[in-house]
Amino acid sequence: MDDNELSQQLNTTSEVETLDVAAVTKSLGVSRVTVLRWIRAGKLEGFFRIGSKWLIRKADFDNLINKKINNTTN
Image (cartoon, rainbow, N blue to C red; front, side, top):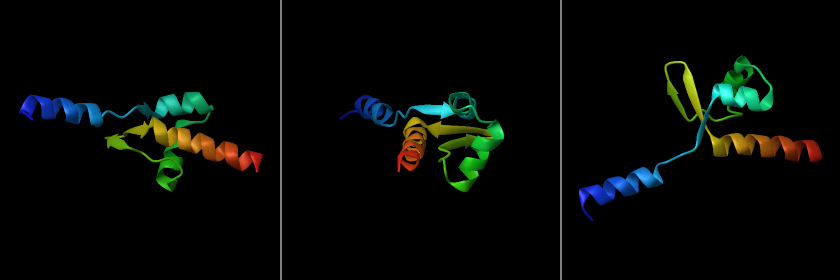
């Protein structure tokens, strides 16, 4: 495998769908402060942080929603 093939494979396998805090707040109808509190409390995993900007994996967001749905129906 040459360097170009390895680079393409790494880029393909490392792609992760992410949401920013604004997208989460809009989707759930909660404030930015609430989302940041969830990240600090470990209820929602903050995937990557640059300065004050957080990115959240879409899979982690989906897990949060599924947990809430399961807790509501039980």
